Image 1 (cartoon, rainbow, N blue to C red):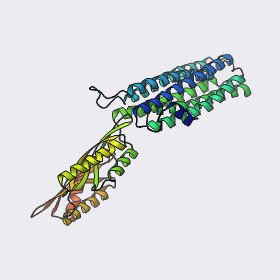
Image 2 (image 1 turned 45 degrees about the vertical axis):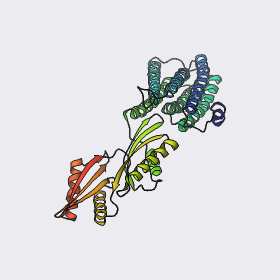
Image 3 (image 1 turned 180 degrees about the vertical axis):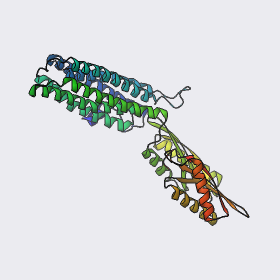
Image 4 (image 1 turned 90 degrees about the vertical axis):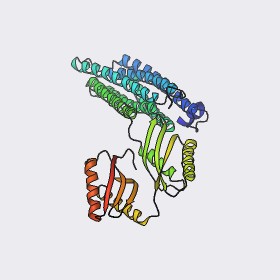
Length: 390
């Protein structure tokens, strides 16, 4: 069903790098969500009103709010598709994050209203819900439809890497559980003669709020600038190392703007490589990323001495010492200044943010261990946080 809808309504659907194709995916997701939720809302509100089941009625209102979420998603995609301009040189893709935040706020409001209504039902309980075959059928069908909607949105979100569609998919999944709770309330009321409508309403409200918290937390993290996904880091590393002449990379920084990424990286090359050859290598790598990925990459070349036995031996020694202190540490930008009475080893050490040692403690420990190995060697490390998986 999902594949059929995509083929029918998205032209050139395999070209997900195209803004037009991506917008078509967003439109399809939004319209499908609004249509499905509108139909479910109408059916549940009717069934809830006829049976007097608050949980069924509340679940219908939840679907009605999901229509609003679909509209927000639609507007968010339209804005995100706008091209870059003077005030927004990186484009408008982050508007999807704002749309996801609005979806989260809608979910919070709904959860609060449902919680108040459910508590009121517990304080002043009414009669047990009247058994209604219509309610049971509507809720059962809704669970199946909502699960399909979750799978549909998850598939679309993966194709176009959209946060707002991911949020919509998660909302659909929690709706399945919410609807299941409402169905349980109706069945228990019929066969056990116990009114658990209010309890189930609270249960549904908590699930809805939990989904909102997850969406809010994930979206805020991206707006604040979270660490790049390890898969993206590995993708960049693998592609760079496909080019001959690359001996290592470090200081990789990745910034996301919706589905697009802007990155900078230091690429280590042989110090004897001619300047024009190195410039050509950097251009080739940048052009490769621009033509074949959604990553705009800027390459900085770092020369590395490869044919000096003493320098190579000192580099290996430093790397061993650093790994002894903590295997998660990494060394880069290594160079040696050889003198008559002593030799300075100058290098950078990247440490994870969760490291319990302070940068000064790491620096002192490295210097001490290097001196223990060789009194003529002096370590001059620069300790910095690792901003990506090196």
